[in-house]
Structures are given as structure tokens and as C-alpha cells.
Length: 163
Picture 1 (cartoon, one colour):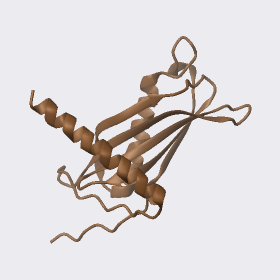
Picture 2 (cartoon, one colour; picture 1 turned 30 degrees about the horizontal axis):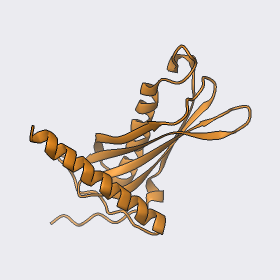
Picture 3 (tube, helix red, strand yellow; picture 1 turned 120 degrees about the vertical axis):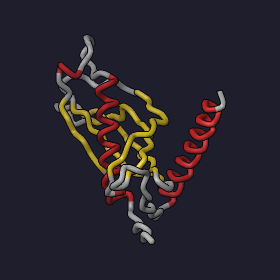
Picture 4 (cartoon, helix red, strand yellow; picture 1 turned 60 degrees about the vertical axis):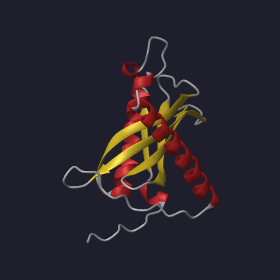
């Protein structure tokens, strides 16, 4: 029998990415391309997942992604990810995206996304994910919201399979 993985705190698996937005990452208006932001969200989210599970993982879905403000060429793009909830072989990661003006240091929330990852064991099969320690009311609320999103996702999936 395989022992259950030890619970982990979300703080032990956070990830952060920082880059300068360059012209080759932008559209003709001088703002970062949405696809570039999506790519960075996926990578930063996957790192938090890997740190939590110590396994490889696949992106199973993006629950929601909102672009709130554009990010200009020359600004920094800063992404922060954290595990919000753990299921059996999958987990949800929240990724927040900020712009930072180099001249002033002003930061603005520009995007937020929730991604689901499925962890894979050494044989490439879905593997058991370590539990997430819930330590604060905020942790509890994030978990509640994640479970609601998961229920909606599963409902949509069932409806799609019924077509």
C-alpha cells in the first residue's frame, strides 16, 4: 500500500514570474499580446502545481481568465500563483497578473485566472495529490470557491458528453 502524501501549505508551493514586456511580445498598439499573458499564466501556474505535488502535471482547463487592464511595452509583468484547492488527482491554482511601471513602481492587477492541473505519476497515470493544509478563513473561502468552480466544470463536462 502506498502511503498518503503529507499535507502541504499553499505558501510552500507559490511561484512568481517577472519579465519586461518587450516589443516582440506586443500588438501594434504597444500592449502585451493576450496569448503571451496566457502562456505565462500556464507556466507560472504549473510551477506552483509541481511544487505542491512533486510530480509532472497537465493543464486540464482554465476556468476563467479576465483581462482587466492592458500592460504596456516597457512595463514589467509580474505573475503570482498559489494552490487554492486539492482534489484527488487534480488541483486548482489561482494566478494573479500585475503590471509594474518601471519608472514609478506602481503595480496594477491586470488579469486573474483559475487553472486546473492533473498530476501524473511515474507511469504517466493520474497520481494522488498531497492534501492542502487549510489554516485561515481566507484559505477556507478560496477552497469553497474552488469546489464551486469544480462542480460547475463537471456539470458542463457532463452536459457536453451528453451531446
